[in-house]
Image 1 (cartoon, rainbow, N blue to C red):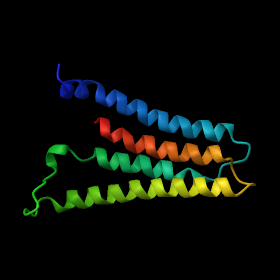
Image 2: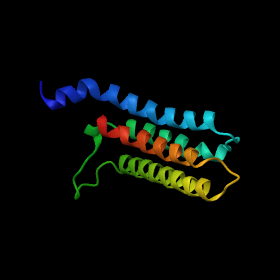
Image 3: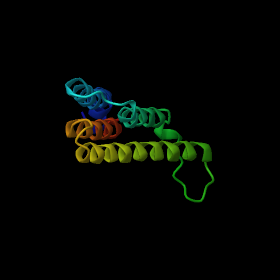
Image 4: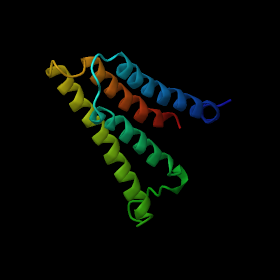
Length: 129
């Protein structure tokens, strides 16, 4: 078997496991936290999952890579918005990590680290599809 065939067989399972691991980090941080986690801390992971869903709505065969052809501008706009949502969610999780590390009365630093890991794992799982 070639690597492309193996990736087609095992890729979705690996992607699901990485996605689940990302959410597992977040659930672990929320459950083990000594203080109540505000809803603001949940938003980066929710938007990273939304970006992953947006990426999954596009088939690779539909993407036109021709620089001179107008192509499907709606598809390119959809992917651009998905990338923006993905990177903003990652930036927000890093910002919340910095906030958690600097404010002693807020959630622990592990909550911020878990938020970053969640966003990274939810978004990196796209490489296995």
